Length: 291
Image 1 (tube, rainbow, N blue to C red):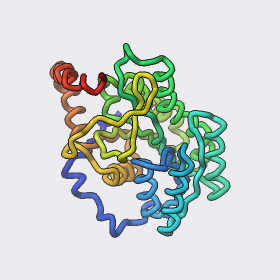
Image 2: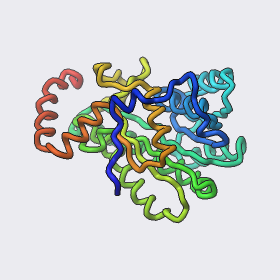
Image 3: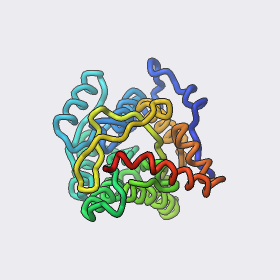
């Protein structure tokens, strides 16, 4: 397998100006799960700006409708489907929405997932299962439902993973396990389905700006605010979306994003013991977030 593509600061500077997008995805139909807000919404918007028709998805009707109306008012071709994609029947409905509206599927981006912030010893089993289900079945079920149409179009599938899948992250056991599973899944499907021409890729997202109301689950499953992150180490949602579309255009197998992601990847590749020592040291400073 070729080495992962690493997107750094200099490459980010080379991103195309948002005022004059090229229509790379003209005529293409994309499903973006979890696109009512956050990175999913930014990705859906960028796909639309580059000519695609997009099926929006989410769990909250008010947010989903707000996004759909906003996109339609901007002149974009979109439809929406309220669906929990950890349920296969609802995933089938999401795919049916795309086929009924546009007659084809060219791109599937499995973005929807639940994150967490709790140490394993304190984590309720049902919370572990919920987080793992959202990250694994939330990718598997939409893909399974869309596979016949992606085979017809020799389309593209991108699993949204995380830099935490590369080496693990304290307080994120279920999340890290789910995101790591996606890389192995993509590799396996690339081998099994190589004759279909479908592109299977994984993008490892690093620290990214979040919506102000974004929440993660604590040990008991209650939503809590995310921990503070220094903006200097973050990519914007638009930068992530643009990098993601570049990953799809080039049909890359693996891409790592953000300066923090680059550092994470390099440290764990060449200095794994030092990387673990740094993580263990910083855990002391994270303790106040789990009281």
